[in-house]
Image (tube, rainbow, N blue to C red; front, side, top):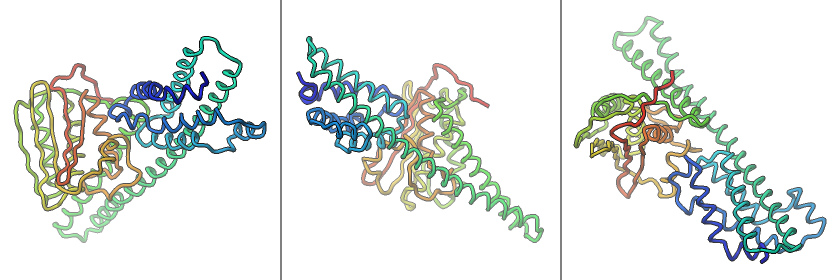
Length: 378
């Protein structure tokens, strides 16, 4: 059987193996749908099959080996590389997908051809050449997207650090001038405190993000505590930042458990700030903590415009390329949901989002007891 014919006739079985392998590439693939995992594999394989059947002159072979010819497989591979970057695959995982695809196709094809024919060698050579080109184009697009993301992130960091720093400098100058009334001095001190807190959050989020991208799990320090106490503390802090917003809080069940209160508070602070910044200001933000069996959970709900379905899947994967201006309680770097996901994973828990026509709800779920307590790094 010709390799091109085999690829067309066995497309689904090849894609099943592609999807199964892609699903092992954690953490990015953990919650991806079958459609997202398969991505552009089908059109890429179809284009490779068509390419194998196309005769080539020596000049065309040379141009193709030099990357001077564009085809459907290369176009699909380029798009694939960009999308894999967007959902959080690392470069090694991207290349591993193509290695697995090559091995899967050749292994299945060889099993159908007990006696290899001379023309099979030519077809295998053409197939390997096409896969190599797909890898090169996919990696090139991934690298381009990585560079764009790095530049965008650096610009955001520089811009957002400048604002609180300027506020601190100006307030300190005003205090030093000794011309302020007691009320004005108190206001200036409060401005310095808020701005310093914002900068601290930016640096914390940046360090957490950098650590996770280097392959380190989020450090946590587990201790015994009550989830409602953490909720109360965080809610009071957010209410102080947004005194004109309405908040509701309810509890249900036994909220006693084992978790890192600082890290859980970090998640809840991110969720509450997002709810305020992106929700309808005339409607209350609602937080609910529940204890049910072996699970503790906290949900944060806001009214307002829904999150598009196509965006829900990637909310927790990496910082977006574009964002809305940060609110006063936000770190401003667009890392909050990504870090929230990493903190939940460090607790062997999960975080999810649901968004309808009127309300959006984020839910953090944690096991009541932690199997292993991980000491936080200094």
